[in-house]
Image (cartoon, rainbow, N blue to C red; front, side):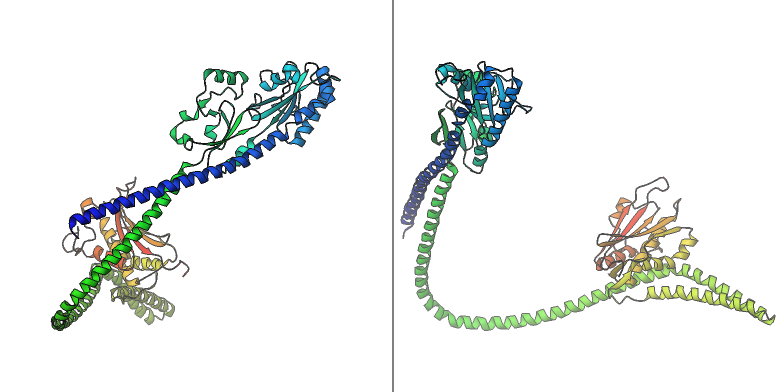
Length: 609
């Protein structure tokens, strides 16, 4: 197929697919709109029947109450407090039994004489409602027309539906003489509003002027479906129907609040020209259309995929037939190439094995070099401590010689008790020398590299003991703040090597300080053991901190260090899963700051291990 023909065919198929998708969208939206309207009509019918049944249920209640002789008696003798109180209690009992908001009696001037809420702080008693339509309608034409009205309560500020009937003098036939008062019943419709809130689609109940007074959208309440003219606004304000609120159209609200306002379904409700409205969700229609369009698109994609697979299969069959001949010719060449490549792979495999053996040997050499480096650093520390250890051993040796000479003299004199005391002193001095030598030998030997339970507190004490002589000679105070025991999983020889390195560095740092003090703090933080070694020296300059843990970097004069101590210590701590940090301390009244080295080792065992 030529290129131009292929382009024309693809264009036609694309146009057909677009037409099918658009047609599916239109048909689905029409069907969804019809179904949505049917569903909305059914829903409105149910709500309307429920609402009208409630309104009609109480229609005869004020009519019945108006026939109470007690009501006419109270209107005839309004100053009789006992009679008024009896009517208050009667109305209160009727209100509770009927489960309505209120029942109250007004005289011919519109003043409330008795009410079911007579004992409430928002009682209607004494309030004048002559401005309300539900008062002057029954008072006109000898009470031929009962009153009906929905409004926000002028006293309670609670909305309700009011039904009223005229009250005639005692013995007078209804309609034969002017009424002497009006009995009114207030019914709350808030339960409907609460029930509507479970519906996602907006539901409103609007009065004859198009003012929404019940809705599951609180933002629409006391708003109008259309703009009201000045005369209607004036009538609403005159009756205080909506507590003096300025009624604005829903269309004037922000777009977000207007969401859902548009085409609606409506049913008439009650005697006042109310309209019950349901605003079907356009999003459901759009969703149905998009769903149908998506399904159509998916079917077209599947059809195109099937056609593509079929076309590819046809092409593959042709290609296979053409390739069979080529494969037959290439078979011999392929066998030769395979044999040649097999030989090359065999040689390459042998070379890789040789390189692997060399890498393994290099790795063993590297590990050995690392261990030797650690041991070299340890021996360097031993060399630095040699003078101090010699001094420590010299004192017990001198004491042993003196005590031995004294013992020989005392023995010739027969003073055996004093000889025994001198021998005891010789034994103690020998034990001290043995302890110092034992610590030195334990520190000097190579680490086996095996991890075990290590008491960090004991390691700190042992390290401090090895350097105790040097601290004393340099008049440096060493303070240990450590618990009795705190265990980690590590290598005790290498932990001691790190601690001795850091203690010697701290000892060197305070050599020229005014306050010569080194502090070792051991603490546990979450799952980490922290060893803080703090000195009162001059601190670490910024250019030194950048290279502090690099091999062969040192700030000490020639002959006092190789620059390996901190590098080796950092490697040892990292091998145990921890880290070695360094920072400067903030200055205080006693010092100019100083440095702080922090050893962080994961806490593998509890302190009670």
